[in-house]
Length: 362
Ligand SMILES: [Mn+2]
Image 1 (spheres, rainbow, N blue to C red):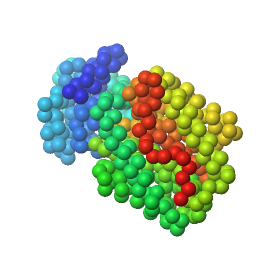
Image 2 (image 1 turned 120 degrees about the horizontal axis):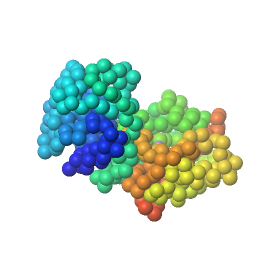
Image 3 (image 1 turned 90 degrees about the horizontal axis):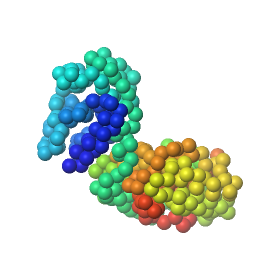
Image 4 (image 1 turned 60 degrees about the vertical axis):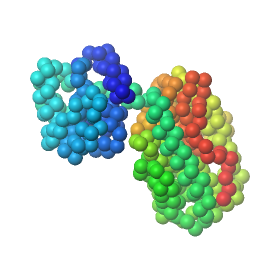
């Protein structure tokens, strides 16, 4: 049922683009379009081929049994076509006299070349056709994200009771991950970021064996995953008593987070939401230190559409799930980021993140 609605929406796009066949190869897009739960992983080992009349999944032997079971009662036909999925799909297209094929532009150049040589017709690139459908969530998708965020909040509450000077970043990251997975997270949405002291000034710091010191900022960015769907949150705490400068930066970022959330409404542009938060930091003299976009969509992938960065013309629609994550990063000193996950509603944001935002001193 779910897959049928998604396929119909995609066919409307194909008709508008005058493309009679689309080869979907991105694994998250294949998952979304087929609606098969728990079958696919990150490996690009499938072609979900959509034509005006048929939906066929070409897959390899490793996924054939699970795909066939998942396809029961759906409109999808599963064909195990290892080792040459491309030839099998192109032969079927030739049989149906289809002379124009769109291939997702996220496929590699090498893959594109292999399709071009196997297909007797014109191959064109499709950009973001499935991704733009994924940007607006169905209620069942939102429920999974809500569940993933609840596991993420619970891990934060748990880890607060364990953090103390002398632990390493790695130990805190493991504690977060262990708690989420023990309580039902399928792996993690992404490797947790735990960055202490000067490391917290790196927006996407890698976890290290650095020992956390007294009086340092500690930034934690992490998320659980439930039935394929991600959560994403960041909190920054002070391990000890906050200095005046730490508190000043923290409160500015917190105000920017509130302004960003306040600017969310169905139909707003990504750059407008970004601007609302960015102007708070600019007014505080910290605008130059906010060196990334305010937010991004979250779903089957932790970074997806719509984008809420300073140049984003994306329309943030009712039903999208996005992050609001302003940050200020001072090289050598440290950084603060506060990230919430929100559902976009017509009149505003519904915040899914439950963890407190008052400055926590441990
Ligand atoms: Mn994020």
